[in-house]
Length: 401
Image (cartoon, rainbow, N blue to C red; front, side):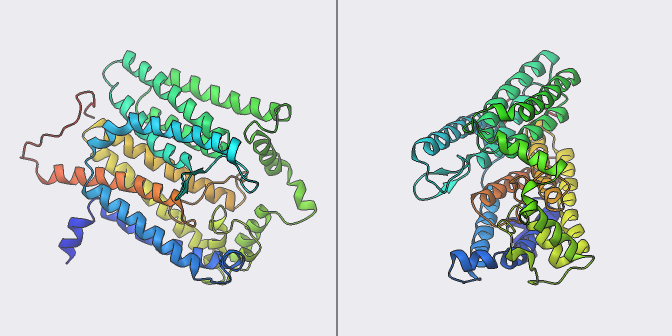
């Protein structure tokens, strides 16, 4: 039985165990944190969102198994330019759809409605941009001149994609661009070019902050960007007239103490609008305490550690860069969510990967895990047959590590 499962659940076993623990955490805390939402949206059926979360988790595991068992790693190399084109098209359509067909309940162009379902193109961008950057960087490891060309290509395409995301979601645009920058650093982009890009990013952020009041309200969420930084550094003016979401999150952390109130005993979640999503880590600490919060943080650190091991075992640059980029992005997102929940960072709209209440973002996260596990499984297969000549259809441009 164990052998049969191992043949299906290929790849890094520790990573599978981390995913199982994260899934269990997700189920118990989403069920606890959606009580208010259930009474508002599901006629008081508190089991509704638990079942919904189970469906998304099972669908996510199905995506992972599909990618790890059927899709060869080389497919991502070949599809990455197409995926970037699809991503840019989806982002543009989302903006146009919002401008001409948006409804009063929709504040931004984050979601793209394609009729039978909707999704956030920025979630697709997270994967496609990492894959594209990995492809370009892996093809350019021979000379400094090639690396410079790859740097400008990656920077240019990333700039276009992140600008389109920036119009509706500044924090996600910054998260993606930062992850791509780290990936370029891993790929040994010259420090001079990397420093130039970092300096440009800092200057742009400062300019946006100080010129936000001069920009029209229709220009993305620049005003929200400035307000949240001011609220974080000087205190939220809204706290003078009522408790803010950030205040509730801090209260949840305080109430949790060392060992928490116990499963299902959160009180703060009944007053929070995003307790099941952006602030789910705070609700988890309220119920399971500092010890539980530390355990959850450790799961993401283990994810990072296993990602490093998978990268080190790769004998080709493309899969190594691909895993590095996806791991960095997910871990960054996780710790941003945690920092916001405990009041250590300005409020953003980043869910906790594989824990926050599911949706299309959970399926894209599953795709990221599936790609990582596929690379890990490929590494194990190569290691298991050292004497066998394995011919892999990978373009010559992909350089060995």
